[in-house]
Amino acid sequence: MIVVASPGQGSQTPGFLAPWLELDGVADQLAAYSEAAEVDLIAHGTESDAETIRDTRIAQPLIVAASLVAADQLSRRAGRRPDGAAGHSVGELAALAGAEVLTADDAMRLVGIRGRAMADAAAQTPTGMSAVLGGDADDVLALLEELELTPANYNVAGQIVAAGALPALAQLAERAPRGVRVMPLQVAGAFHTSYMSSAVDTLRAAVSDVPAGEPTLTLWSNRDGAVVDSGRDALERIVTQVSSPVRWDLCMTSFIDAGITGFIEVAPAGALSGLAKRGLRGVPNVAVKTPDDLDAAAELLAGASQNGAVS
Image (cartoon, rainbow, N blue to C red):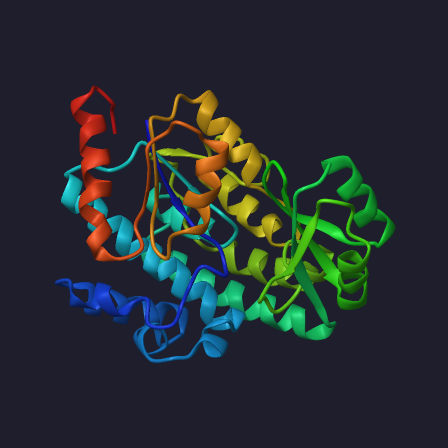
């Protein structure tokens, strides 16, 4: 079983879409996605600086568009679709499109709405996020509770992302237990916490009239690592996920339980493939950062078909 995963916010770097635009049809694809998301993806993905593309309104559509383009190119080159799909945070919208729960245009329309709503929610109160690396999980979680911070992402053993008020995050860095590093993240607010409640309401209204297909691939939810069999359930999960923790650790456990034989992270790749090296030890792993990485990913995907995997 080969799983294709889409990354979350923070994966993009200036100019990362430029090499993809050299492929046939991608410029037209991105133009259509830009219209759906109400964001000029081509300009921001090729010309905008790092500060500009950190803006949640821009970052989220860029990430989902890149994932959709890369996944489409991968399936064409391999001659088959993957067996499963998952996404970290906003990457779940790309995963839902890959599993045909959403059309690509609907995924891009929703990510535009999501990005704007989360940016608006973040602007209400100064908040942030910090990666907490190392240490005993119980000790880390106890300190977060004491400081009234939320564990917003459980990425892998020894890596939790804390979110909340900026003074509390500063205290976290000062009071970090022995052997723990605290690294502030370049994000606009405390995503996946109660600070995003207004964005939940906006996104729920947006999905209410969106057609939802039933998943045609195995689709995992990062709310709890469960396989999602219903399209409407998948949509409800991406709504509530905006203000609830990302459990990527549970997704990786579920991948192992499902007998995963390969892991491919699509553009803008790097973060999830790094986590997979720790959480999916021994599983072949390809990060598709540029079109140059497509051949290795396609070989892994096509090889699974030759070895008897069913897509």
